Amino acid sequence: MTRFVKITVKRQTDKARYQVKVRPGQVTLGQKLSPSQLVTNLSSLPKKSKETSAFLTVTVNNPADSSRYTPILLAAKTQVGKAIAASSLIANFA
Image: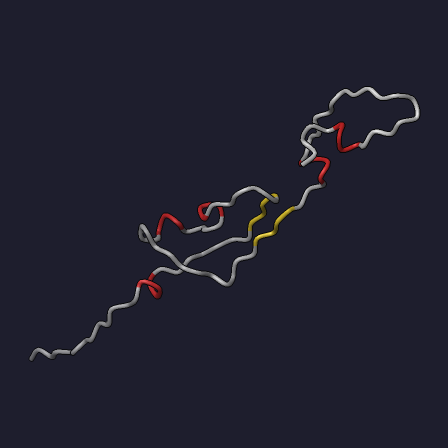
């Protein structure tokens, strides 16, 4: 005697099947950070997948201005006792 059992298979949504796994990251101010640097299981996710995650922490390092900018100095002449504005002696002041 053969017994049959009815099994119902429900289709899972892609969100349920594929969970994005991320790790915290660090980036220097002004630099870019790509998803491949933060997503640890990128190769197991379907192509063109997108998800918004509220569980991602990215620390932005803000280095001192002295390490981010290099002033280009200009030569100038002035008369004794006459002041020159420091900003006029730097070519890339802006």
